[in-house]
Image (cartoon, rainbow, N blue to C red; front, side, top):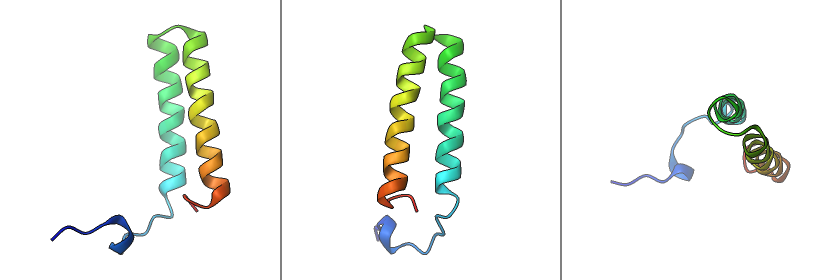
Length: 60
C-alpha cells in the first residue's frame, strides 16, 4: 500500500530546521568545491525558495 506524505502521522516540525541545515551545508561545500560567485548565487537562490516556502506555510 502506498501512503502519501499527507496521510502519514509523521511529525514534520523539524523539517524547516533540517532543510535550513542542508542549505548551510550546501553553501559550505559549494564554496569549497566550486567558484565562489556561483556557489553564493545558488545558495542565495535556495535560501530565497526556503524563505518563500516558510512564508507561505508549506514548511510550517
